Image 1 (cartoon, rainbow, N blue to C red):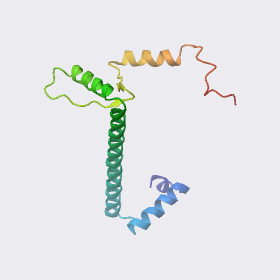
Image 2: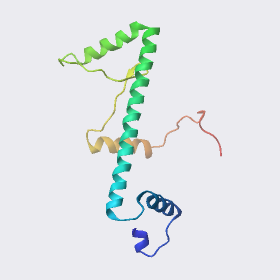
Image 3: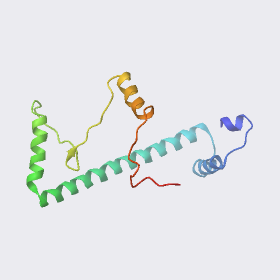
Image 4: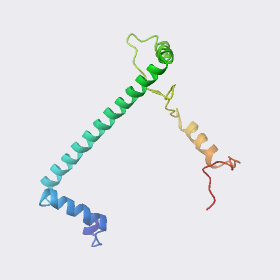
Length: 137
């Protein structure tokens, strides 16, 4: 809308979006746009729920396959989870990825974050020049 108000051209993506809106809303009133946006949000929420459900089922399937192959490793993993949550009355299952627990590293302060990125971007490093993914262009 801002582009049109400034008397500039409508992009091809804008034309496609406008055609899609006109097809679904029949007119471009504010009420119709709000209804359309809410429908699209609902579709997105539904996709998100489905994605989570599929991921949870995949994890359960992998865990079951691993249990049939080697039940001792599963019990050992559960034992580690219980040990790490010994102080909690009702311990919860932690998602397991490739036999190790997932840990999200977050920086505690700005100095830690800046030193981390500075070490990556400002210092000269040799790196692995023989890595498989490096290709000459």
